[in-house]
Length: 457
Image (tube, rainbow, N blue to C red):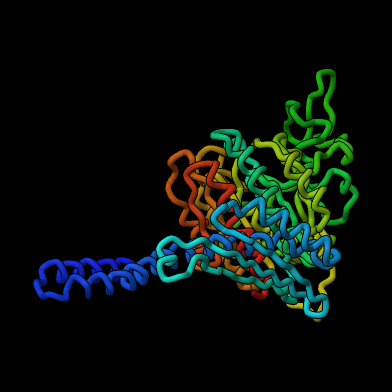
């Protein structure tokens, strides 16, 4: 805008000189036009240099973030080499001359400082004797004391097989893991859990002897008389009558799936164990996790970990099958942050503050849980277990001081999910996507926001 105003003033001035008829006007104009053009040219050169400085700042910020993870272990020479390598890969501006990049790390304050300077050749300013214009900027990253614990509840239902959603989810999640890994200076600064879900979740078949499993429904469904003609407690096996439910299958044949915990009869929408993370109590069936031989059992969940290789491998192993039960994915994400059942919570250092985050991603509406729905029709009671009239799992989680991000990947023209909107901690933490490809950018945005919790400035 300043350049525009200067040019307008120049045009007006030239116009006045052209219309003047005094004897000394030509000489006066000739003397005056040189500094005027110089000033206007300086504004043009300054605007160009300022644009270049903005690009320099952006590349410097990105370089500092990339370098920050390695900085504590590098020598000064190594840091300079890596800083220039990272920076030059992002900043390609041939008009920036004599470019100088410097990086330093202060171990006592965990602070990384980077500076960048360059010279820009001028065009118009040469008239007034200024042939180069210096630009420079700096950035500082100081790691805060805050630590992160992030639970990822990821939709692994059958519809994720369409529109490239499962492939995009894997790419987006692995990119998010890279960002979170970079936000950790030391092991344990950032932990992540991964909870793949459909109608059920998989707690691991190797836990078949655990005291926190309820086998009541599983035994009934997998007994030696399952599928036989039964009446009044007796079943026909083709050659004779045997007692119903006799000869139950061995628990070591269980595939690891559990469904919503609570009572066997369908509950109302008031608080139940499927909406809480109260510890399981042996002898109290409603608090235990009900085993189910679900034939579309998702891959086994991973509790809080900073084994980034294993976390990425878990993402790669995910498959899409089964129906949608967002509440079970959400409550097990919460369970992973506090421990319970097969999941242990790493101890927290009282000298550090902790930020606890859940990211719930789903591509559809709820269709089935332990009690309601048939897998294809929307079942409002399933939604109500999650959030309804200010109660449910979402509220319980937020009341516990945990931040919830929700992502709806809506490639089928479904309504915008008011359930996921209400479940998110605030409106900025709900994302409505209409294509699978948007997942990568969205997860990157969330990852950047979370990384900022670890960076003081």
